[in-house]
Image (cartoon, rainbow, N blue to C red; front, side, top):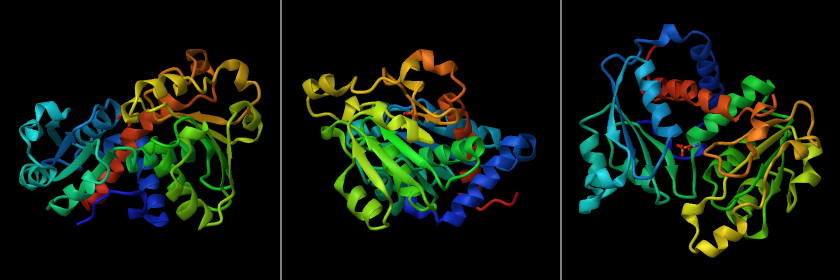
Amino acid sequence: MRHLIAPEDLSVSDLDELLKLADDIYKNPKKYAKVCEGKKIATLFYEPSTRTRLSFEAAMLNLGGSVLGFSSADSSSATKGESVADTMRVISSYADICAIRHPKEGAPLVAAHNSTIPVINAGDGGHNHPTQTLTDLLTIKELKGRLNNLTIGCCGDLKFGRTVHSLIHTLTRYDNNSFVLISPDELKIPAYLREEVLEQNNVPYEEVRYLEDSLPKLDLLYMTRVQKERFFNEEDYVRLKDSYILDLEKMKYAKDDMLVLHPLPRVNEIAAEVDNDPRAVYFKQAEYGVYVRMALIIKLLELEV
Ligand code: CP
């Protein structure tokens, strides 16, 4: 049984295969319209989502399969005290594959240990979001043409932003990438990423406070929202929430071919005026999420295409 719980569950050759398949699905969607006939995906979302849940559901529907699930803990028996382990034992007999999002770090791993179907981590607390990373990689590959030799700026909430954690983890595995980590002191990346991922792999990185200073050297700028739901007090959130606002004035400092990515949802960190800049690719990025999730479903279900 294969699950996708953390970025390291996929080797570089797995990633290359998934991206190749996603690219083919993007270009030839009709070819894949019946691949999952008779199959079901369960989307178990204990935390809010627009893109991840709906793109998993769109992915399965595009493949000719069906969907079932819940979109909040409130509408599930979690409110009656049911554990993730028990829920997963039951769902294993209702569906062929499952995507789970949970506010507690590690919950998808618990689900996988209690499952007889493939489990996909659709975001666990401030920890990981591996399918957002697949979306990011497909976006970069399609629009930049490579996943190596990149200077990547990650900006905003690097402490709680799980998408950044999974992205750094994965992009360090490609040659000659370096990172500029732009955040206030309170929102720097967790120590384990700095020590066990960046430093252990000798990946060049710098941690800086200001976005403007770094912009000219970046090939990619990955903006993130300050994660209100992970703060322990409102005061800290209010003080930090508008630490960075990317606008057209700042974009003047960026390279002509720098791409701006954002996992979305955005709050204030990118001004709406940036949306029409050709370097702003975050809505295209959300679209790519469907194709790469289609590829992932096919691979985890080990379907012939
Ligand atoms: N990027 C992302 O995970 O978005 P949602 O929270 O809307 O799923």
